[in-house]
Image 1 (cartoon, rainbow, N blue to C red):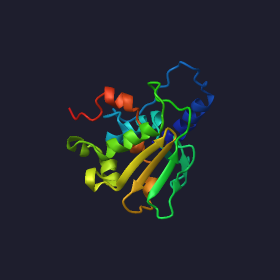
Image 2 (image 1 turned 90 degrees about the vertical axis):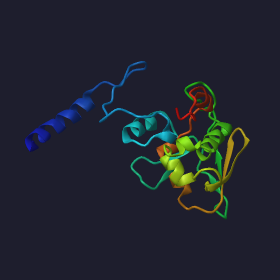
Image 3 (image 1 turned 180 degrees about the vertical axis):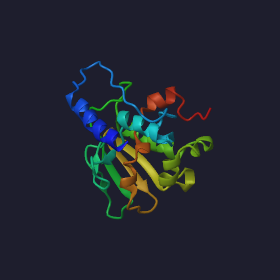
Image 4 (image 1 turned 120 degrees about the vertical axis):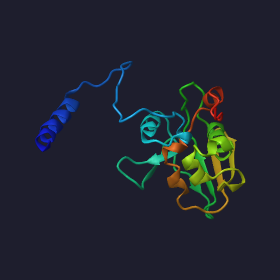
Length: 191
């Protein structure tokens, strides 16, 4: 087995480096260890589904490649402005970004997602692990309010300071989904 791995590893690297780059319209096939269970990042609880959703959706912020602590803006145009009391996070949304369905990624879309997460129906709360742990639901939510005063400004107001709040928002579960697609796909229907 050890000899096989010493021979196979260089061949795998060589074939990867020698392969042609994909041109537009071609298909990339990636092997994962099992099937995906869900395509809604807020309801995903398995690694295979995260592999897929993390490659097609983004949150406001993410981690810099190779880092577990350095946060970078994704759908946000910059890291948020945080109030001195640590309760208010003001994000500016990157302009010109669209969902796969052609609708704009704007502050209203981000607000819709956050409201959805904290107001999941009871039938879905058990499926929204990270939303449960990080945000909570209804009156027990850690979020006091979310606002979209204009199309490029999204504000989160916490009930109490949470030094890890921004880091938690890098989790794949907090990817922003198209409100139009969620409504059409009945994203809050547990059936």
